Structure formats: structure tokens, C-alpha cells
Image (cartoon, rainbow, N blue to C red; front, side, top):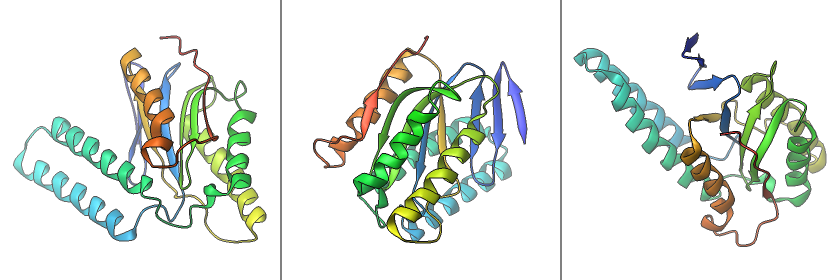
Amino acid sequence: MHRDLNGVRKRRSTYLPHWEQQGGVNFVTYRLADSLPAAAVAELKAEREALERKLEFSGIEAGNELARFNSLRSKRIETLLDNGHGECLLANNSAAQIVRDNLLHFSGRRYELLCWCVMPNHVHVMIRPLDGWGLEKIVHGWKSYTAKQINRLQGRTGTVWQAEYFDRLIRNRDELRRGVQYILENPVKAGLGPWKWVDVSLDSGF
């Protein structure tokens, strides 16, 4: 489902809404397939479905309630990710470099790369897609290429990345500053100490 409101385009995927705006900046998080405990994922999904049913039945305006829920949900997911669940394939420097090099390779071709961080089980990226490149296509390209390379590197087969990704449309300078700060500080907050797989190259245009 696609919707365009004041230049902001909403696309609903199987599980999550995604927002894009021509010339806009997106904060994107994509994660390894085993990065969250299955029980936690099921619980979060059940909570959202229960809230949607409640709001629909009661006739309450859902926007603010869902926004609050999504904010809390994002914080819970961030905490779970930083706990280092799963194989943490990206803790391997060679695997992290595959992801880093892939991000840099398409900078200036498909998007402006403003800030990024490769964590042991997830990746944060802040980009401004260029004309002709939608966010879904960009993220699919990242995951498709790096999955093949990481499997080859580690002599494994199977799914590398979770099918979905999380994204947030950056609205103003304050959101941009907070997003960049979060990305740059994420390794330290997760207890990783000095971390080489993080960088910023910011020319936001805001």
C-alpha cells in the first residue's frame, strides 16, 4: 500500500510501515536474522496486534497511541539488539568490512551516506537516497550482496539478514543531530569500547 501526504510517501510492508520523501534523509536499521530472541519478536507482534484491535473496536484515534507504542517498541528492540543475541556474525572484522565496503561503494551513486555503524548483529545507516532510488531497493541491494559474501567468507549457508528493516524519516536538524549521536555512541553504550566500524560524513542540507 502506498500513500503520499505532503510529499511524504508511506509504504506498508508485511509487518512495518516505511516512510520516504524525495530529497529526505532516512535513518535505517537492518539486522541479522537471529539478532532477536524469537519469543521477544512474537511478544512485540502480539502487543501491536492487540493494540490495533483495541483502537479499532473503541473508535479511538489510533495515531498518537500507535506512535507512543512504536517509540517504546523501538527502544526495547534497540536494547535487545545491543545485548548481542545470536551468532553476531558481524563481530568478525572481515564480515564487518564487507558491509562497510558495500555501504561506501554505492555512496554518491544511489544515495548520500551521512553516517553509519556496523554492530555485531545489526547495522545503522543514515542516508539521503538519490533520485530514482527508493529505500526498499537500496536496502535489498545491501542485504542481497552482503549475505552472499558473508556466507562465502564464513563457509556457511542459509539466511543472513532479517527480511524486514526499520527506518525513520528525519524531519529536522534536531532529529538529524540525535540520530547521528545515537549511531556514533551505539558501540560505547553496548559495551564494545573503541569501535572501528563507525563513521560520519555529514552534509545534511537541512
